[in-house]
Amino acid sequence: MLKKSMKVIAMMMIGIFLCMLDTTVMNIALPAIQTGLNTDLAHLSWALNIYTVLFASLAIPLGRLADVWGRGRMYLIGLGFFGIGSLTSGLSLSVGLLIIGRAIQSIGAAIVFPASMTIGIQSVTLNKRTSVIAGLGVMQGLAAALGPTIGGAVTQFWGWRGIFLINVPLVVIAFSGCLVWLSWRHPSHGQAKLDLGGSALIMTTLLALTLVLVKGNDWGWTSRLIIGLGVISVLALFAFIWTEAHVAAPMVPLALFKDRQFNGAALATVLSGVFMVALLVLMPSFFTKVQGKTELMAAIMITPASMMIFIFSPISGFLLAKLGARRVIFSGSLAMVAGYGVLSMMNTSQYWQFALAALLIGAGYGTIIEPITVLAAGDFTGELLTASQSVIGVFRQIGTSLAVAIFVSALAVNLTTAKSRVKSYAAVSVAQLSISNQAKRDTLQVVDHQLAAEQTAQVVHDPITATKTRRLVADQYVQVLKARSLQAAPVRIKAQVHQQVARQVRSQVRATNQRIRTAATAIKAKTKIELTAAFMRPYQVAWPFTLLLVMTTWCFAGRTRKSEKV
Image (cartoon, rainbow, N blue to C red; front, side, top):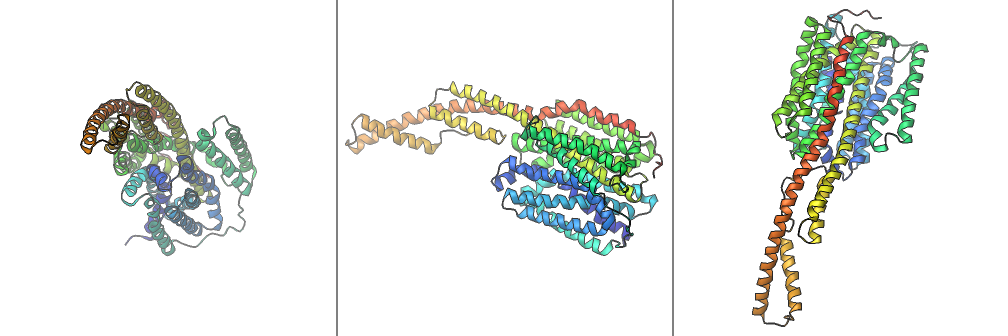
């Protein structure tokens, strides 16, 4: 029989898994959701972004609220919100209802995530804390990494609604287990007060910052709205710091940031999250849209990264005690740098090269994520422990938001340029063809349709189909009869005329189709080259910035030490 503490930790892992899974599970299903709800990507992006926005904005104040009201009670409330949000999202009939469902989900996640970390850690004795923190940290990284893989498989077999509905039975299991195994004894907080001013300021800071990050490209980086939100975020941050330094019971004790390794863990959390999530955000769309893979195949193709996280996370926990944080995090950082080097220079037609990049990036992230989770908690206890986990959770969401904002925005700009080049190339190519104006318009319309979906056609079909050919024959036959005044001619004469017209039209159609096929094949090749470059360019630009992750190594001690914390 498992000990009660292990059962509690298992329930906490389910909560963490659900929260982190839903930060990335939607990415690969976006085309299917877009079709299913008959909406555009601009509106659908809110369903993706609102989860990150509210999660990042509410995690700290709701984590503090759990300290006052009781973490067990708040955990159950959070699971309830998450389950209702998942059910609403899975059954939604419009994009508006989907956005509402995702918002409810995110409120639940903002409650569950910090509470689950603290409950799990405090369910064991001090000498077992490191292994529990490591296990919970591995679950965070693994869930986020498995999101696209699980999303692709579920979408392929059960449709996009399944990626939300699969949460419901897991919520029921976690809820039932918590009712049985959680301790409901909560220390008295008669003198404790909520830092309402700090909560409002941190929510304002993170909400404004996240909106800038995820909507800057859509609204315009130099627009008054984005600049105004940026100014609000900065002013609110300074006001928050001043408030926390002077309030009697701060929501985020600034003592956390006096610890060098906590600061290093925060930086490494953001940077490693950016580079890991960037791989998971763009590559599934590249495989499905540009290379024409199914959602399931795309999910399988990015699995090497998730597999390496699963393998290297426990290994890094063992090495942390032997080699010290600096060496372990340095090796993981180098692996991610090397992975981005391969990614930025690879031949996309050779899958093994992407697999190598994914293996390196996943191994690097897996090596980093466990040590920084352990170092973020360190020897903190009580409210400092809760605050440390809430703050690190927020930094993780900021990393996700940065990845989505930077890489998706860069991709959007690149795709605009790529589409413009392809349209110009297609217009010149089609204009040179000796075909009818209608055939030219039809050909360019197909090109526009493919570009609108950022896709390349897998098969170049004859633009003039058999049905169109029969219609052309019929129209031409009528014109010939009128031109030759043969409307009253004998049936035999009309039959001969029809045969002649049919031979002539079919010959012209074959020649026209051949010309269009040749041009379409060239346009398809050009489209694939341009779209591939659009997807790969963000990784090429990002490669030098991965060295920032290496630089965070110097925030950590050379060997594991007992930190002196209040």
